[in-house]
Length: 308
Image (cartoon, rainbow, N blue to C red; front, side, top):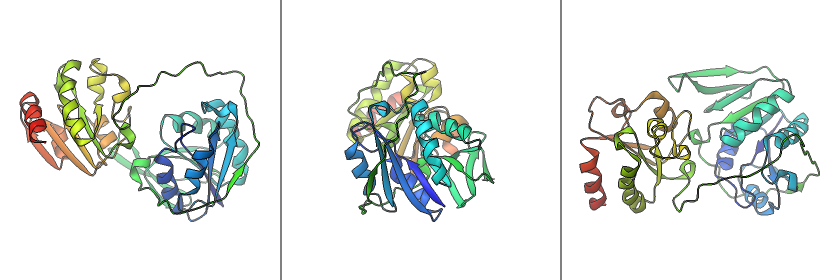
């Protein structure tokens, strides 16, 4: 029984989720291999080889994997799957895109968004927007799992695993990469930030999100938003935190003008410390907050920035 982990990267830098997946996989007690599929991604492979617990890094370096399209990656992973009992990927946009295809190609069920490993065939995952926790046992020979990386600590970086190049090329001509429009920001990426300050419908409009900028700059924080703020057009949807947005678990999460709908809580309730600022003292967000401040955010935010 061995495990294959799909490494998230941008062909230059390994994403932090991979080290967390390795920590999750270590609880299965089997040999762990990491797959790096991309183009000119040798640096990524070397970074993956440093993760403690990794036995080997497999590198599929070819131009067809430049953009890690789901059609190509799913075929690659499916071909490799015959040698593994478990396939793991992060429950991110990439993992959610290609892993169901891997499960379908191998005629097995996928277990999504796991937050704990009980045994080699039994896993824990949230359901109903995190209002209930399900323990799921799989009898499939191949376990296809997406992992909520925020639920696991990162494995240490004290390894020097061997790196092996594999010559497997899958180029699906029915789909092609056209363009990617990426948001450029000097602030940390939401899913990797240690501190996040998010605004909700209480911000009233997009211009008022500027009130968060000074605080974010002083704390080195990323800026997020609730779905209500995104749906109202205050900010773009790549800032959305929640069940249908990004799942985060920073050391500090500051929720400003966010009532705390269950869909939002599902995306941030694993944060180490939660601070809520809201004028409604009955807001559900206060039920999970470590610190709560009841008041008008338009008075509180300038005072907080000045104090910082």
